[in-house]
Structure formats: structure tokens, C-alpha cells
Length: 220
View 1: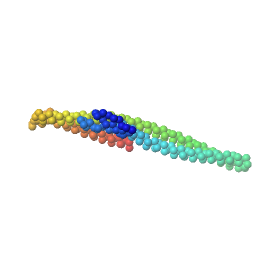
View 2: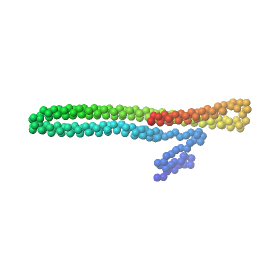
View 3: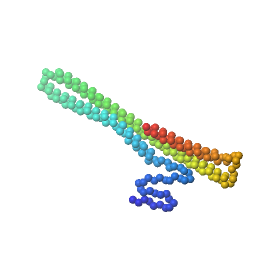
View 4: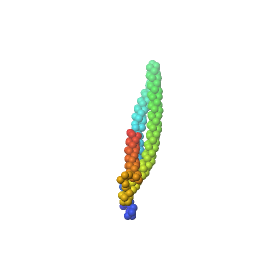
């Protein structure tokens, strides 16, 4: 496939399927904000990790329940055989009935245990599903807040760069017009503008690092 042709004043367009990154602005020096698909990829990774954790207890309990049901069927078959033998062994009817009562009691206990395990598994699955939904909701909110904060930090960084440009321009104009004075070298606040621009850029960098650390702690 061929790429799209553009004019001489347009940005270059890469072929279809390639990742396009706009060049940084020369006047402001800002960096491009990280794209949203990377954030949604993290959500997909978290969901892929949590889903097996939620299903492993259910599969283990289901396997055990299947074994109990198999034992119940086996006991029921033995019980039917013993009932047929009652007609041939009247003398042994008491012992057979006692054994039959024991087996029925055992079956009732096993069925109650099976029902309890099923309810426990269903409750755990529901709790895990609810916890996953809450975690996904919190992660979505964190990603939205991070996106908004990055937007504000980009604006703040652009303002800091603009202040630095203004300070450089004022300093250049002072040099050209001979307005500098040996007694008061910062009478027009040029140095203060430079310091303010530097502080704004440092603040943006520190806050960006704090956001990355907070996101890593949340994922862990």
C-alpha cells in the first residue's frame, strides 16, 4: 500500500500501520503527551491478570464437586443393589437397613457439603467480580485524572518556556539598546523571569515523576 502524499508545508505522513509522532515544537520545546491507547493497554493487562485469579478457585471447587457427585452416584447404585438383595435375605434385613440408613445419611451430608461449596464458590466469584469492577473503575478514574494533569502540566511547561523566551528577548533588547546598568542588573525583572521559568519546568518534571510512581504503586 502507498502512503498519502502531502504538500510541502504539511507534516510528513508515514505509511498505513506505522506510528506517527509529531515533531516537537521548536518555539516552545514541549514534548508530545503520551497517547491514550497505552493507558487502555494497561487496563487490558490488569484485566488479563485478574481474570485467571478469579477463575482458578472456581475450577478447583468444580473439580471437587464433580468427584463428590460421582461418589454419590456410586453410593446410590450400591443402595439399589442392596435393596434388590433384601428380597433374598430377609434375615439380613436389619443390618442392610442400618447400612442403608448410614449410606443415606452420608449421601445427605455429602449433598449438603456440595451445596455449601457451590454457594461458597458463587459468593467468592461474585465478590471477586465486584472487586475487579471497583478496581477497574478506580484505574479508569486514575487514568482520566492523569490525562487531565498531563494536559495542565503541558500548558504549564509551555508557559515556562514562553517566559524563558520573553526573558531572553528582553535581555537581547537590553544588550542592543545599551539599557543594562552596572548598579541594578535586574531592574526589569529579566532574571526573575528566567528563575520563574526554570522553577515551572522543574515543577512539571517532578510532578510527572510522582504521577508515574503513583501509577506503578496502584498497579502493584
